[in-house]
Length: 325
Image (cartoon, one colour):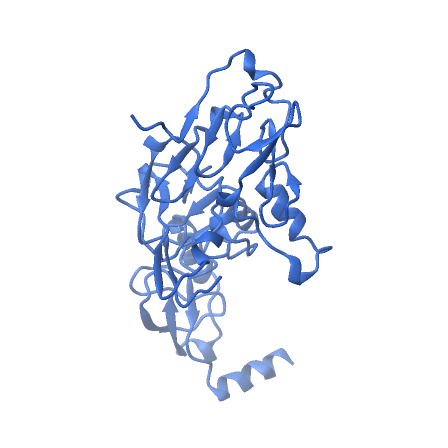
């Protein structure tokens, strides 16, 4: 029988120091030796933060090819050894969760880690709670050498562990590489597929989403974004996707208030018959509507999430300028 490449070891006498060692990213009882620069770090995130800081010369910045890690150092007895779960010297378990494929150790098994062969990395949250979307994670590489109550669907703690694509970029030529993405099972029949959705930067903070350690949200339009960034947007009354401008929550009550606002703010007589063309960000419909200084309502879906597609005529602009003066 083939030995499993990852497993969870129950608490035992060999668990000396469990939870007492590690870094801000992971609790573990070993350090890794980076194969790229031969330096010692608590984890790959510590390496990447150190080697990509502003103090490092741009030419020397790099990420660790974490699948290529070969050697680790026990945090208790300082013995250098090959990657394995139990120290060959003191017998301590260096990580209650251990994945030999990802060279990954973690003492905090409450995250329900599991290795996903289709993704090629370790995920968190329990394998039974997620499914793979082959389209959202598709990455094209050409000629490469060396039921939620929230107004949006939250995929919490899914992308806690990242994958280094370095090993895939060696000796590749005209390669079509599919890197699947895991999404919450609750989204299986409802999420909208967008090709390479996870291989983009967060549209707010610009951090690469596939490598992020932060919680991620998939908006109804299918675009991905940090959950924290969405919450910051909401604090500033921003309720539309920063990529496609579609509303990501039910805005019907807001539109009703807008109806009342427009009804109580009649336009001057000179503008009452003025018509403008608009594009609805929510349904994509274009329509010609009466001009109003506050907002314009889509004739199809009744949304006020619209934009002008044609500028006002010159006579109207000159009249407005005169009024301002």
